[in-house]
Image (cartoon, rainbow, N blue to C red; front, side):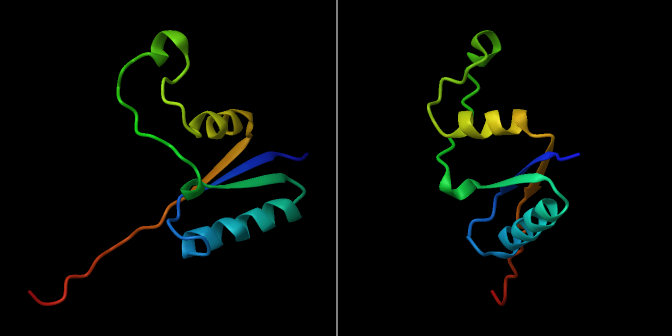
Length: 94
């Protein structure tokens, strides 16, 4: 039975390690007979929540950005995969 899989790549670089992992996961999901779609979040304009609370009553966000599209796909998906890099900085010297 085919599943709808949504893959969210939060890598800051296309082709970066996290993004490559997303591509490989998508390849495996499709080979297993699933429908798979990857969204590269850096391509989207998504604002920060302002905490205004308007969504509590209207169930809509007052921000007009790409999150509506992403959220709709998340609701439709049967499986969601998220990948984000862990970035460590080493301080050398002082």
